[in-house]
Image (tube, rainbow, N blue to C red):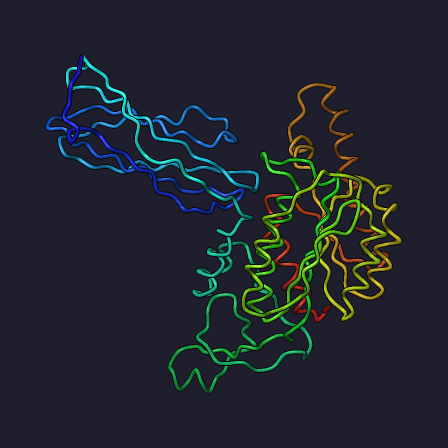
Length: 391
C-alpha cells in the first residue's frame, strides 16, 4: 500500500473561459503540480462535457520534485448551450513504477457556448493594423460620390492610388492618402431561416449555426461602419425581432438573442415573414436572408414573398453550396460509374447556380457560398454593396 502525507500529493486545476465560441477551437489549460519530494509520472484525465463524447483526453506528464506544469488542449463545440465539465482525475505513479495512486482534483465547471465571437476579436485586431486581407476581407473601390472626406492616413498596400494626397505626402516625406466614409446610419438586418432546410450539417455544425455565427460578425462590422443592425428569425411562424440600432449594448443584445435561438426545424413560412417584416421595418433596409435552396422548385415556392420584400427593401439571399457534392465532383473518376455519379453531382451544382441567376433576374441579390466561407463572403458582399451605394 502507498502512503503519503496530505501535503505531499499532486494537484491539478482547470482554467478556461466561462464562454466558448461555437465552431472555433477554444483553449483549456490544466495546471498540475507535484508536491512530492520525489519525481512522479502522472496521467491526467479531464472529464469533458458529455456532448463531446470523447474519452481520449489523457495526458501523460513527467514531473520533477516540486515541479509545476501547464497542459493545454483545445475543444471545438458545434452546438450552442451550457456545457458541464466534471473533475480532473490524476493517476500518479511512483518513481520505480511499483505503485499508482488515484487523485481527484479540480472543480466541476459550467461553460456557455455562444455564437462564434473569436472572429470578432480577430477582425478588431487586424482592422487596427489595416490588415483585414489576412481574414479574406477585400478592399473595395468606392464608386460614385456618396462619400465624404474623413481624414488623412499613411498609405498601406491595397489603398487606391487615386486617393494619394500629394501635398501631405511632401510634408511628411512618405505617401499619405485621403480616406472617405460611406453613408452612415443605414439599417442592416440579419434574417435567419430556422426551418428544416437549415438542419443540414457541415463539420458537425448545422447550417443554422453557421448562419448565426455569420450574422454576429456581420453585425459587428456594420456597427463599426456606423450602420444600425437588427435581427429577425423565423420558421413555421415569425419569431425573434430585434429592431435595428447602433446604440451601446446592441451587440450584447444580439449575442444573447442569437445564443438563445432554438428550433424544431419545421417548414418555413415565407409569407408570414414578408408580412411581419414589412410591418416592423418601415425604413428601406438591407435584409440579409440566411436560408438554403436545394432546387429551383424550392426557391420558386418562396419567390413571391421574396419579391414582395424586395419591392420595399434590398434583399440579399444567402444560401449554401453542397460541400460534399462539390468535393465529389472535383474528384478524379476511377470507374465508369464515377462518371455517371459526377454528372449527377454537376447537375445539382449547376441547379444551385441557376437559382442565383433566377433570383437576380427578379431583382433579388444572391450569394452562394460554402459554409466555411460564409462569414467572410457575407462581409465582402456587404462592403461591396455599400461601396456601390446599393443601400
